[in-house]
Image (cartoon, rainbow, N blue to C red; front, side):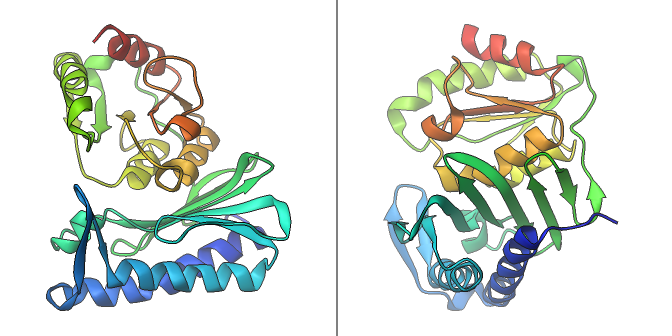
Length: 262
């Protein structure tokens, strides 16, 4: 059985508590108050309630740490080196349409580096977690990225850009990808997409225009599971740009080249 540190216990406990409310609200989806926050980006009372609960739990355990949260934004703590990065409900559109594919994502940043991450799927009761240098896990099982080496056998996940002007270039990449791999999936929850790469369920994943709370925990999961994470095109920092390509080390160079050409 995997041994969880005190830090991971703090994070998983916060995710567990928030998940109870999300499960309840998901069962009463028609009763939720929903407001339009932006194109393709909805916020619900469930979202805000989960974020508030996570913040309370994390602040109680580590009172000096700062926060970067999807709904409430950035707040500094007395400890300038540590910051929680939180998405209380990744896959909000799925949630609001009654699709059981969404998650909670919590990461800890220390001096600009992600050192711990948790991605929790409340419906499947799957808790993906990782700590820098300690490996990645699903509940108590050690994770490894897939070992596939050929693109034509690979299952790749993606997400479509929300901004209309970014769509033509993305569609060229999508078309080229579809002609090169076994198949492509689009499930609408980037944190889970990255967790699934870490678990070997997907062989790769790419998307543009994501926020730090969408990918911080997932990037660590993939790297600790033996995978490679970069920008889809170029060599920048995916956490800073929000543009991410994740895959095993066999497929990553081929996928990177394929997207660059497209």
